Image (tube, rainbow, N blue to C red; front, side, top):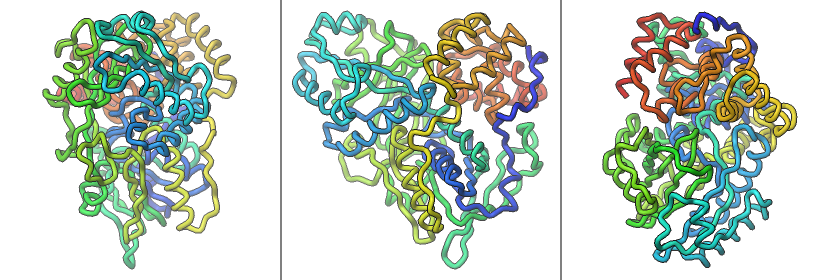
Length: 546
């Protein structure tokens, strides 16, 4: 299979080129390749600024790939009267659904109301009416609906209905968070930005008390290198920039000033077997009243999240046994058939950054965002949400432009995403689905191929036309085909097998892959990634150790 795919440059490759960071003065250097860094780089590049963005690991390797995968207003924030944040997020939700139908898609949530529920029918109905009002009175696809006991129990047959009074459904939206970040990085590169992953910012460069750039280090050595790299050294270089923005999230708290600005909260998610529904659930923990979700994703189920203060290792955020026990126990209060630890397929953990607060629990802290500017001129992004990151990045770039004396307005609002199909999405989807079916790709795989790649799905279909065996699923239970795998390996700045199987295609999270399966996958992409047998073995071993 690998030998049949000898692919050239089709003009869409995300090439990693560390050497492009040297020999230039940039208008803006962004440090941190999560959702805030990606939106900032994309916005700034579209405004015509000379932009560089560096990420010490892979794109979205921190919190931005450890979210609940939701684009939502945050219904629970209404209880803390954070109406401004909810309205802002709902506005962004609507914009993203329109601008990126392949990347952000509608997802309905069910909310069961039991006789002992903390929030009763009347209060929940009032909250959902307000949610709809703040969203600008959405259409039927997003507006809330009320169900009596029997209707709600029929809609969610797997829920315990012994004390059920009724329930509601309401509309929000879903995404693949890591691919959202990746597409924005691709858009920034297309607009002229220099984007380099596995590139650590080691220190700022100052002159006259002001930061004029940063020292960065290439973290790829001769034993682990993309074939697209031109620079064959692991040394440090100086990157000169007129403005510097730090969007490193949790790592801001490692500096003294950052500790004064930030509060960290840990959240975990478990990957569970599929439930017989394509809708999500918003539930309230019986033990402490916190909100958690049960969400369909790639044919599996996400269960999460926790919300606890975090003071541990920023580089190694792990899922603890007690957290697994907590989520399973709370979910089992609602399910007819209990989940056990044996049902847990995968898990992941992330650290949210919030503004400093003396609130008793992280759940009571606002998720709103702010920009801090240090005395040396470096701007720091603090807090925020996946949903509202675009608008916050607009404020960052507005500040940068004001400092530079550049009059350029935001170009990301309502702008179609880089991989959005050029024609009507529904018509394109129908045409692409029919083409995929003719090529032997099943309906579920075709749906996710379009959501994952947008118009670039045509590239995968072309690969299948050339090599029909690439239409096969990589693993039977999940909707990923070999053409998708190779497209990611070829075009998406993959350095390590972990990049490919966690963030480009989350197989390591959604399945318990055996060593044999990892070997087969590595052999499939080895030629594309320029790996010899020894390199492939090292990459497989690294994935097994996780």
